[in-house]
Image 1 (cartoon, helix red, strand yellow):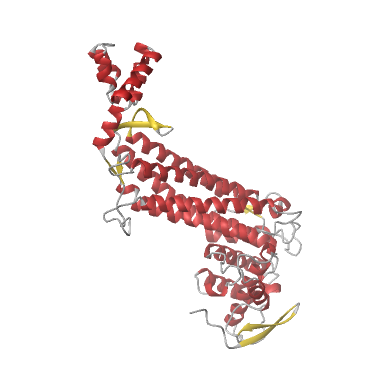
Image 2 (cartoon, helix red, strand yellow):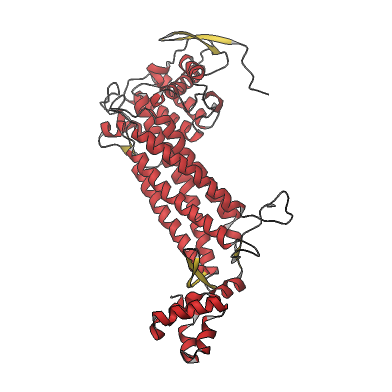
Length: 467
């Protein structure tokens, strides 16, 4: 059953004329025009963006009150309306499609109209009466679409990176590090080019992945730092026209009072307004993280392949049946999920890069699609990493016997004999071991290449794996 259409309407006016708006809607004429103009995808900017955008409106209203530019009653009513928006009360009122007019003017007016109408209610006005709180004159005072949408992207991304993604990556790092310690005694064959290589410890393999996540945390920290400068107060171009003296500082102080995230004014508002370089830098950090995650997920799938006809060196937790036709089949479901998350991030990253390139002169008009893809990437990475850790990594078990057997049978063990018998002789030994399905140790003993004591020393698997 489709969405029920409203049966009652009110009429509102904007600079283009009269518009029919659903009677119960908190948004107004400009939002309704966007709904009619852009029935594209059904996708909306996420709650993280709405909360950040609303916070800018709250900070702006309070700053304008403090500067004596906005009536205190109106300013306080707008701030209260914002608090309700940030708690999710009006989520269904933000109705503009992601694919909308450039820069996000419709999105900005959607917020302005909802806040103005709710503030009017709070001041005692009737919902269908002329509004004493004006979307442009009051809710948008000292602002432009161009600086508020841009700043909302930064605020939402930093908030979600710090509150959700970095902690999720840190917990995955800890889980991998715990497995590295648990599996440190387990000897196995390393592999390069998907071919047998010299021995290593299973714990070293997990330790490498833990280090990838530690470095990913550092990159995410730098990504968040890159987006802390805000272009608020620049209004349309960076000149600050209509913002008023000291507005910029007061707005950012108000935002920091709520978030505690240390935002600051951009050094050059013209650069900050027209460029999306900080977002591209942040997307680059995200890219390194999901590239690492995809490698880890694929490595686990390989190591757990089988159980009889693959590598079978580890067992992943069984989280669900793996086949609708093959009874008892178990798949690496959580690793597959993480792979799909990373592939979606690949698409989001490409969109962000191309959209950031599309900025022209004093403004990048592709900000809505940049916002959607950046915040989607952060959201699905945080959720994907959390589920992968809890439902996969923490329950991984080692198949010790298989690991040890593979390590002992690797023809690459001949590498350890190079110093004693030379590369060519060791290469011939490796070829013969493979042809005869024999162990390097047994062939070397059969050929009397070295004494038993020398073979025991040189082919000590634990010694070969280093510290």
